Image 1 (spheres, rainbow, N blue to C red):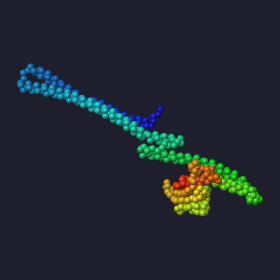
Image 2 (image 1 turned 90 degrees about the vertical axis):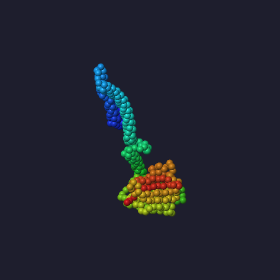
Image 3 (image 1 turned 60 degrees about the vertical axis):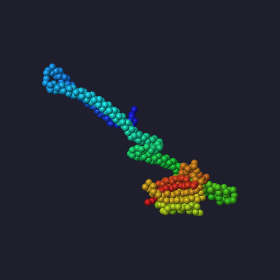
Length: 396
């Protein structure tokens, strides 16, 4: 069974630092213990003292001059006193050596313990971020979410790696979501193309038949009323087929410069000639795009706002973000707002809050804005209502 990364670091550091330190300290202990006071000098003095005592004993029976006898006795006492002092010095030196050896042993054990503790903490401190990053990579590989952000202090390099992995995970999640959304939209688009194709063929015959019936049926009769109903429903089906056909294709052809400020003014007049739509736009707000798809998208948003609140406001301005200049449009109303159960799905196909809606209007808006490299989203208007945002790359 393989050891964990933290344990491998701990053992490596222990082998590189603590074990050599322990060997060096043990060697020092033996050196200190063997470096006690030598017994040679004391033994030599003892031999001299014993020899002096024998000499005094041998000369004790010999008659010597008074001064020579006194000198001999003084010499014997000096040798005896020196031997006594040497024995005491040796005893004190041995005691001091033992005390020093004990102190060295204690210091050695303390240093080894501190070394092991430091090695353990250091290995845990530097292996924990690596273990964490390895766990994050496993999470990213399996598609699981990363743990919440932490406020613990780590080395700057580990912090940069952690943030880079979190950014990578976010980018991968966005790409995965966009890929799923793209595949879903492609399926919806294929369905929409087929529905539009199937509607167009019988719808043309139905409209011709309605025109013939309208010429023969009196307008004030029951037949005339039925013809009017058929004409209205045929017109609604024709509009639905047109929306399905538009949803089934992306903007095509070369792009041109489009001033969204002028386009917003034209859309406001078309939707509400009575002045119910007010403008507050910087000018110019130029983007590269396709005029007609952008006009349809903006018309759809403004028309929805006017239907919801009998009035709307269009705000437009430029701003910079992520080293890119953007044109930002806001379509603001003070109506009932977006229902809570539809808030996260209003741009999905076939989701509508109107009885006569097809559920493709906002989906077409999102598709058009995305095809121009922008994005669209909705939020609440302060004080009530809804605000739809359009953001497109500005033309430099």
